Length: 381
Image 1: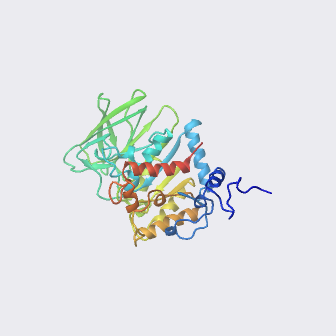
Image 2: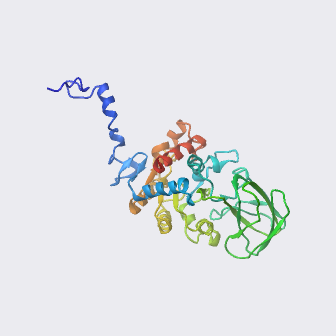
Image 3: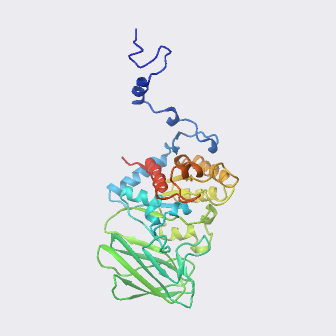
């Protein structure tokens, strides 16, 4: 006869506390098991749910891990692009260090990656940029920094402390312009920006594989999208393209003309290996989310769907449909999804946990929580 007490089972054939401890060594709780129920607000779903990840068994999951391994350990250039709104940008983390404190920044540092592209931003968002007579466009489809007053020269400096061998600025000028660039305080280099409706690659001469400081002056009206560094060896590159106030519709092909968000980043990074997309905060009724993911899978099948958290106590008429639309894309395209509503909770819950800077945006700790959930999915070990 089997001694049930020895096995940690009561006479009623229920596990004792010791029995639970022993069983826990080999089995995970039901709430974390394969096939357990997805969050109620996500509706009925057929895919595997292992909180906070939905569809962790999607083919993209393992292939993305392979790409990360290739960038870290196999001397391959691998491009990961993160797109979204202010919750991706890192808004409200403060201190002029939003790219570093955002979840893409935390993921990048955790993986030992570099930035593939650095979007030009006001100094209070990214203190590596110091612009004069330039600001972000009021149209959410336009990123980077543009001339405010065409009668005054536009001036900015940019310092990139990561060791790099040089790089290119991406600049748009409708009428054409001449820019003068100095590198590390050296002689000015005059470079023409052709007129036209798209960003143009402007590359100064640079010496040395080290940190560099660039200063640019022009009397013409320009828009600076950002800086793309070059490196002496192949690297894993992670770029934060989050655009504050943008909705999924803001990323539609052709939105904002030739220098819109989608067109702009594809000009610089034409073939990203992986796209991490967190949309669903701005907009309404899921508007633009299906179209955005159709674009994404048209470029790469290595994508991660990220549902935002810390939003509202209940799914209101705006967030509810967008949240469902994001989950629908994971189902439609068989992509992994990280659910930050599970990670952070709703706005009240996330605030009580000390994860929010305001009613919408995560603080530094909250951004780290989001990054941790994404790293859990992307684990390459």
